[in-house]
Amino acid sequence: MSKSKSELIGESERLYSQYGQHLEQDHWDEYVAIFPDGRTVLGTNLTEVSCRALDQFGRGSFVFKVGEKAVGKWR
Image (cartoon, rainbow, N blue to C red; front, side, top):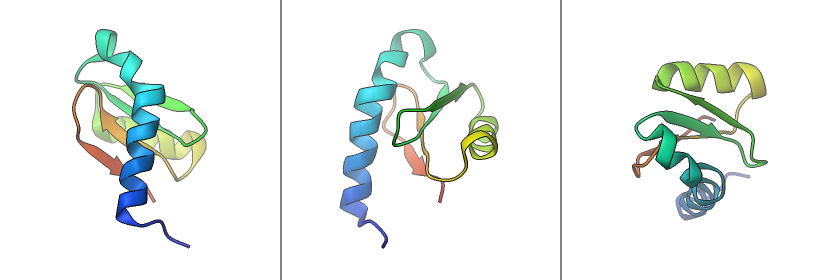
């Protein structure tokens, strides 16, 4: 069953607060893929981070630009 938009937004905010926010001091403007279980992939290029996350762990990550509110989900 698919999650609603509001459920996805809530999950993304929780994941970023828990696993991404601490990266802001040293990795501002980089990208991080965060999986619901806390696994992360970090890098400077959106496409690279997205592809590495998919290759290493499969689907289901949220991808953030560290320090900004832009968010996406790879399904």
